[in-house]
Length: 450
Ligand code: DLL
Image (tube, rainbow, N blue to C red; front, side, top):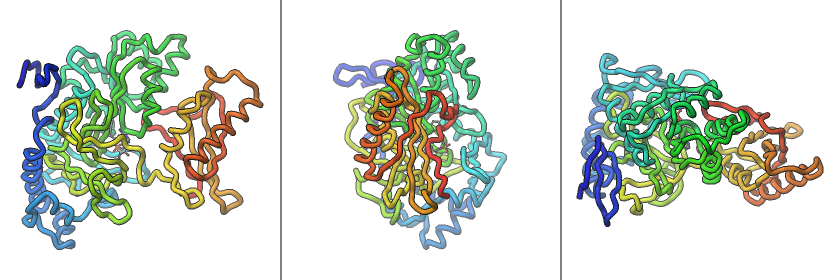
């Protein structure tokens, strides 16, 4: 039963508790959702088949036709789309509408060579801001908040993506973008910013810089952090929450699918609700490509159900996660994905053993003498044997010993690492603030072998 409505926020009363949702769709039943997904899926498959020569050719080659979709499960007969295919069609080859219908272009970040260019229609921009409004509301953001967006606005999707959705919620948005950390801190203080929006690694850097300036980061008026765009462990969450005196919420997305807004955490902080009425998720075995049963860990694959400008069909993300369909205490019915621990292509193979940066991070976060700034370096020793070195900054607040003690700490971390990774790694504690900081995605791995 609805008990009140402010802005677009639908507030339901359940068991005497008022809960905030942005859209009614967030609480629809499984049957309703599947019905909606099926209709939308059939529509988008037909649309890309007609409008995008790439998909027509791909479907024909795999001998599948949109008309053959009788149930949601039939999607598994359709081929995957990969980043390579998107790059090959640079810049606008996969757009499903004429360029005159596109009102915004963004591009994927990082990687060398040509980026993947993504285009949005007027309606896509509306959809996108609505999805961000959902995840902001999930994190507890309201029109009473002042939100500082410290993501790049060009051509990265983070800046504008979060910006429009936060405005939609009615928050006062500060488009600070990236760089000039001291000025960012001045804005946080002077504008009474209550919501910080950036990468988790930048949140830690901000806290560190506030301390360097002689202030206590907990005294900032921040209440909520909406962090995403890179993997971060549960332990890093606690560190950020403690350092900045806020509640930190994860949000996930990727340019190819829409940007941020694919999923976000609610106040339970126990998995990210996927906006399943707009994105159909599958989990596959990254090796065989087989769809995995519910609850198994694998690679996330998304199909966009409502995007007009740049729909993608079965897009392989390389991100590893698990889907949980148990009912969430927040009342939302949308499935939750476990925090993304890493990408299939972030995995290092060290002397035949699979090593994920997230495993290393979780060990480091348990060691008080280690600061949350680290770099993983893989190399070849004597030209052939894999060698793993972990450089981690010393946490001066927790270390008062001598050089000899330093060695002991390094050995302690090495022992913990070998237990978790099953391969040995050399640990080198380095001076505080000597590893590179970035306002964008943290670079944690340096693989010198390739
Ligand atoms: O990073 C979109 C975004 C912006 C998400 C702001 C959240 C906040 P891309 O640059 O295309 O887009 O990078 C997408 O980043 O495939 C993941 O590997 C990683 N990633 C994004 N969010 C998370 C997260 C944006 N919350 C790639 N946890 C994805 C872990 C994440 N990894």
